[in-house]
Length: 633
Image (tube, rainbow, N blue to C red; front, side, top):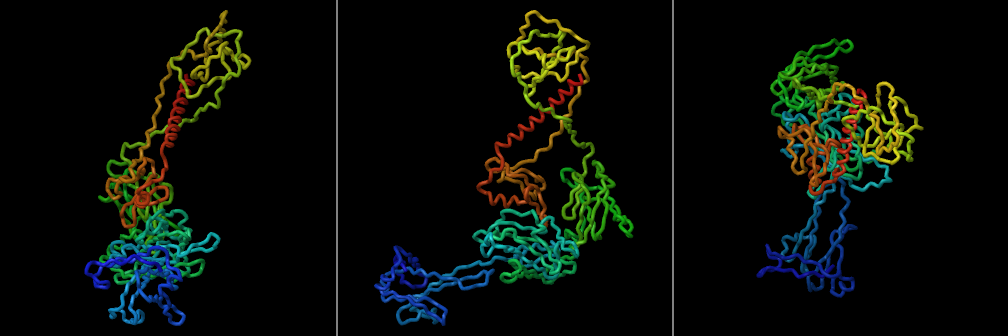
């Protein structure tokens, strides 16, 4: 208990008047000791019921000043995983009037103050996309539900604890997981199964930090015996948002109830109770159910830039297997949307071949091997083989790429060998020659090529004779040439014995040269076509992925000019586009929200060494080409 600052009332008001604006009493100084409380005639007692303490009553013999009373309360044992409100009432009554156990609102001699606090003690809860839309799911628009499970630890797990934390999700009727029929093999593609690490803000909103994309088959597993989805929490002391998609069962109809429940387990022990979600299906156009992703195969014809092309024709057949004969399913033609839709495929192997290219494009006659696997609802398509640069597959949509007529792949010259000097040879001592040999006829090349390193031959070749290490000619004065390249081979017609001058005093080494020969036919090098550069955008001015002309990929540049990584365009299950980082799949929108003020430095001045290395390779290739030309001469 502390002494408090006096309450302030408006002029003409009486404390307790309806609508009076009384300021709160604030504590000041040190709390009163037991002796000080006793001297002022202040005492306290508990109001009990059996062993339970119901209230704390403080008695004043004389209320001589404002006081501030602090009472520490402990919450009763409550079930974990609950959201609730705790209330605390304080009463002030005059002598002779009870402040407990009566209808205080009808007693004008007693004043009451109410305080309450909201507690969110949940560690696990569940909802689904669109749940706030009057609790309805429109099967005609989507044909699937995206479930969301939120997990945050209700306690701190020590490193020494051998406790595995997992969530067990059990589906009710009318919905099925995206997995192979009759199997425990889940289909990991698109947004079928996702787990994102993050935090919750003060309003209870989940803030994504990083999507986990590795080892999903170890995190999400299906127990075929119990019919339950099991999610192993990677880090027990971190917060996660787990989402997965279920399709409506084929027999689902309007008015059916969908139910789903999830529970937390520590090892094999259930903690708390199961959390259930229930709602009814509302469907307005059952004819559109077949638009579900795994109820059709889409074949889309595009050019190299991704633009859709009409007028392409394909033959499609089921390959013979065992006793089943080959079945020709017909010829299909892309419409104005550049697409073909094929439904109700049975499990087996198929072949797709383009038989007619769109106007102005080269025929892509590659036969595409396709495998169809039956799912709990619908089927899944797989491309069997390597079709890089020719076709792509994502969630039962195959995009077949055509090149324009006259569009040839760039020619790239790869040097057969790159000559790298192992060391620079420098004479260890100055040797004065007894005689200097000068060729009688020396032809000096019109151009001397200066390499980036100085090459000094270990032996000097004299026309007409082979010099041995003992006959190395070195000038009497040491002269270091700036950069001289000695021809790889010296060709001299016949044998020439050069005369020796009387007083040789050369100032520079004599370099044998290649005699004149007819000019060879020049070889024109082919310059490789440069790879198109990926565009870049500043972090605060990135394009909208849903705009028609937005790029499929680009580099994100931070506020300080450093690259943050490359993002690629991705299609969500609802058809909307988003950009995610190519390296780990992190959504660009979440990355921008988290790094709104400060972005990590991932590049900068150090990238200049990449350009230096590239220029060095170009120079090496040029030197190799020059050397070969001289050899041919």
